[in-house]
Image (cartoon, rainbow, N blue to C red; front, side):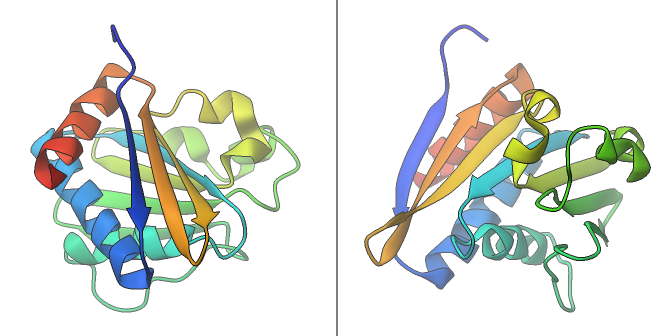
Length: 163
């Protein structure tokens, strides 16, 4: 990757956060990524799970989309892809990821979306995309940065779709 690819945008409400998740799903599909690792940082209540819910719904996942706060991993199927929504909040460090089978989740055909990346920062640094949701008054602000060439391809598609 030559120059950083980044996106920042305001999200007025929960519906806008879900739409952003749907746009991310479309961008990942348009980039034809067979595997992707996305981290999502932000304070409690900032909309991390809401963003993931929008992404999963856009991919055709029906039924409840639960926060993986207690289960640590919630897995879903969308066509030939497996999607894994992880919550690292209760991890004490990267070593805990081995117990979750994290390395196996990064296989082709798997998309991994991990909340609370700061709990395993060294592993999170290997993500394709790093997202952050911050409070911005009554709304939220979404920031996205590509960390790999795969992430850059997806982020460019996302930016093209919303421009």
